[in-house]
Amino acid sequence: MAKLLQLASARLGRIYLPSRSLTSSEVSTALRPFYFLVHPDLFGLFPEEQAVNEHSMKSLKNYLDVLLEEKRKPESAKVTFFLKRGEARNKSRSGLSRVSYQLTDPQVRKTVIAILKGANLPTSYVDSIADKPEDRVRVTKFDGDAFDFQFHEVRTRSANDARNPLDVFLHRNVERARANFEKIEPLRLRLERMQDLMIYDFHLKDIIWGGDLKPYNCRNSLTSFRSICESDPAMAAIVRDKTVVFGNFSGLSLQGEIVLYSGEVAHNWLQKLKEIPDEEQILKHIPRVEKALSQALLDVKVVRKKFQAITSVDDYRQRLRRLLTSINDYRTSKRFPGHWPESLEHLEICLENSSSPLMLTATGQMILPCNIAISRLVEFMSENMDQAQQRLDQAGKLAQKEVDIIEACALELGLVKLEKDIGITSQNMIESCTRLMQYSAHIRHLTHGNHILVDRYYSVESDGTIVIPYNWKFHDE
Image 1 (cartoon, rainbow, N blue to C red):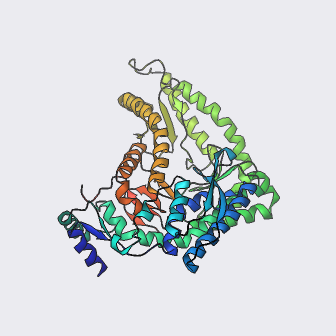
Image 2 (cartoon, helix red, strand yellow):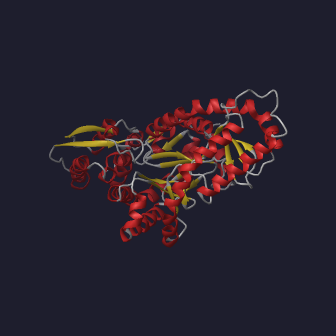
Image 3 (tube, helix red, strand yellow):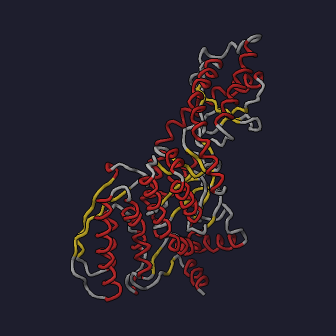
């Protein structure tokens, strides 16, 4: 019946909204982006600020509970919050800001809006909820016939089909996503506290999640890792002052982080941790071999992929030596092409295993298998040299722009988090975020308080994450 009413109203160019004031659930959804900036569990590394936020959270909750449940005006209260924006692992107080509120308004709606505005968060979700019966009809830009045709066409597709219009997908799935998110929200916040405690107790530099792990997997990984460090002081000494990454392999990364694969049992982690000191010694010699390879190939930059999945650091050293030997053998009888510049220092290569394809990445790096024939390498570099330079230049310009627009888009849409899959390029992400912001007035009430992942398909994950394709379309496109 609800769907029929929605379709009927769409033909009239209108959508009927609930004729009621804010409920407890709606208040929770509206304030979720705020909570993820001020919740005490996010301030484990800042005890003083954590205590202030904990006291203020209780005062705010009591104020709202009186308004919602007792239907009377509470006593006025002044609350102060410290806000933690950007990366959750930011350990500097310079990244914190402060905001104060005087809670005096007898209306829930005005109180919630004041809190959101004070933190520079959008209020579109609250604005979209009708407060009076006569306000229940809201005119939209939906064209009746077009929407009806679109709905008929979408019914025949898979729910995850990237051709589905974004607004139609959100209308259908946002409540399920919010319900899933609400179920897992306490665990997400508990994970933040667990991470901060781990960093503090074992003097870690940081904890990073390098894979697509769900909150339950994260909790289990942290619990197992804590157990290892607490039961064996030698392991605690090994991880001290290190960054620990829960990723897709176990060992030492080329950046010097300790990487642990969440799919392995704790016993395997223990064995890998014991090997870390030896691998660190090998890692110290890697730059020297990289430099020798760079000089052999006219000063080309040898770069390392972040969290490069290698069997061991020694395996990477062997790859470098294998290619270096092949280049030196080639140069004993041949020369590099005369049209090459004297220096290739403006280009970047990344060395992979022998099964890797020879390719030029979207960001300009040349991916080389370590067993490549040097004649083929010379041919490939000659063909792609100019394009590689163009992509590298473009990637440098896009990197900061992408960071800025993701932050701006998340704020504009009232999102708890906005991120992309590793396979989505910076250019695709920038274009997707730009369009999201252009349509924000039409979808903010649907995106508010959610976590969006930009990928190549639609989905609602069990933890409430909404997955959307980077090249999404709107219903009128």
